Length: 424
Length: 87
Image 1 (cartoon, chains in turn yellow, cyan):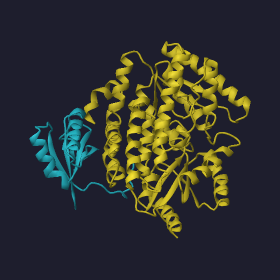
Image 2 (cartoon, one colour):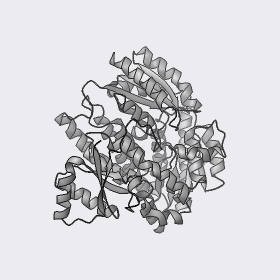
Image 3 (spheres, one colour):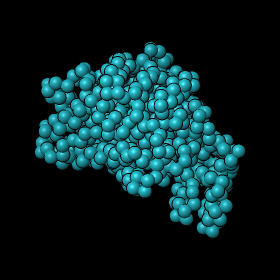
Image 4 (cartoon, chains in turn brown, orange):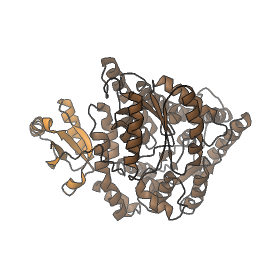
């Protein structure tokens, strides 16, 4: 990616360390994605983006900044993109899926913090991720204790705004989140210098809804017995959607969905008939975390759905587009976002119901419930997930992992044995 | 061991032009990160990956259309899906 050397230098990145990170990308992408047979042709867009993951989109963001637009870096699906987009801001996800960044995070955080948080902090402090360098402001949220403490550290280095996510889902909590969105909107107005209006917020709600619908179309294709796309490719599409321009994202996902629907009609599947279908649930898989999907799919099964933030939680449920005042729109946003079933809520029966529903919808043979090490919330919910699935006769495998490669063999053994059981 | 071939390019614009050209002619090709072993020969992070079966047709097509690129390089099959070396 030497094309972008000057841009990275201007961003103040640690060029030597960044080069070391980039060294691994070609072989990892080759092993996980390009080694697959019979991939949808439309994946060429995501192949391009991942080939130049620290080049193309960062360069676009910098160009937009030159026009006066502000870039908001976010970590969580609870942050309402609509508010930022309405004020002509840009939302980008922030990297956090590589072991490369973990030691940098461990220098300032407890080692018993989850790798996602350690990697995010390490990416910022180590100056090896352009997205972390470009974002004018980070928007955090209180979805776990580790993040809350990490934001205090990141806030010493970069402007940071934290949204207070409720911990329950009572009617008063939905009102509280509406008020929190309204307060965030004021911050966004102040930061961008642009006022929110009913019109621009409605337009933004529509843009993000269209993106959700496009992502949902791709996922709907994965419900078919004739599986037109691998879990690895669907995961890459989903991971990149956090970084891309929302309108282009919708366009490319719709293009992919067109091809997948055609494949289903022609009976073109990426796996042999009878391949066991796996639903993966748990903590998010931030780019470039592809370990779990790659191990499952090179062990003879196929991932057909991700019940996680880098999955269904990102696109399920739409925001009502018919509201006629900002107050009503904030409430509509709150109602939609509060339907997202994150393990930070208590009780969180909604997530169990989602998993059981998706097992039916995606014709799932077995569930792999995987959490990142030190994620106490998702780790604790494994018990309830397992109990509910077993009561319905659905096989489930609970796992814990991190970003290192060292447990790959162990994961292969356990996942291989699970698939063998499914195959009877 | 099967070889893989990479069309090395100066930049994304050149690479995408070749990708679209080969697609138009129905020649199998894929967008790929430029393998580390080849980055000394090409400044661009993306290259065009060709399976062995596409090589001759792709070369003919590039010549016929006077497509601009640096060179076509080959590597012994660099993919190992079970290598488990992630980022």
